[in-house]
Image 1 (cartoon, one colour):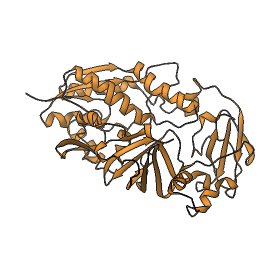
Image 2 (cartoon, rainbow, N blue to C red):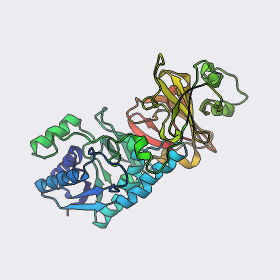
Image 3 (cartoon, rainbow, N blue to C red):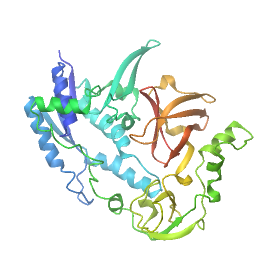
Image 4 (cartoon, rainbow, N blue to C red):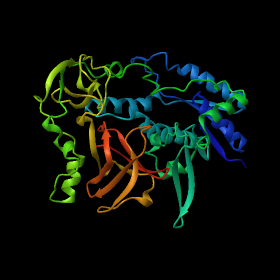
Length: 400
């Protein structure tokens, strides 16, 4: 009897080719389209025509001769992703809804719906690879980067666990994007030349502040600029050369965000709400006349102040380390988890598509301290750090 796979058919070329390849591999394939966001109270641009996507997905399913289902996840999506985004921005944090969407929606609600159809697996068009091996008599699923370095999406799946991976297939992970489009063309799939979707569907091309204003009210506040020479950045200038009474003190010092007072720097403009901005943001400040562009280096939600600095190498943007609290540390490979008192060197990234950088993880009872070889730009609380051994993603954590 054939194994049954439910494919998340999105109406894009990647999931279309995923379905085709699974049929070729001899699986019984069922297509399911996820309707994720349908609330008209949020501004949606024409960049997210979910009806068109649904029609394209249906056309692909008909072409491939497979059953097609639509599952409405808009309520759960709002609850687990959209409401989470509002809560995080309100607290002054920078959420990553794409990571959460995979953990909470695609590989939880969607996966459970697929199991109701008696599926053996779910499959998606992610550019990642999975390898199943035996380690000390136990079955272990390795999450590997996609073969196409420009399209690798392992970072977005950094919160998956072994149980979720055991049910997941990624049929295009070993291919280049150009190969995927070529296959789609050869098979006469309507999505062969379709543009890749950008960003979160329900935001589309709407500016983030416009989206957030649906629930977070505008509130005028100061934009303050700090010189690179300001006392706040003494830790940056020491570059880890300071003396510390213990290793723990050093870890705390290197991962601690810079501190600011409401009187620091000079007022250079006005904003409509600190919660609309993200650390590292350059556009949308509306302050001109500086020799170099201004970047957001910190935001104070309580006092509604945005601190900025000139140039992308301003010390306020650069830090050697970050901390992830114990409750937020997630090992995709629990068999390789560090124990308190242990440390190890890995490769890490703090955002999608960032080149991997050398990082040492120091595991302590309260959490994990990450010390990078080079200063990292725009570390933002609420984002995810992911760490790798070679091309295998071992774990991730939400930055404190």
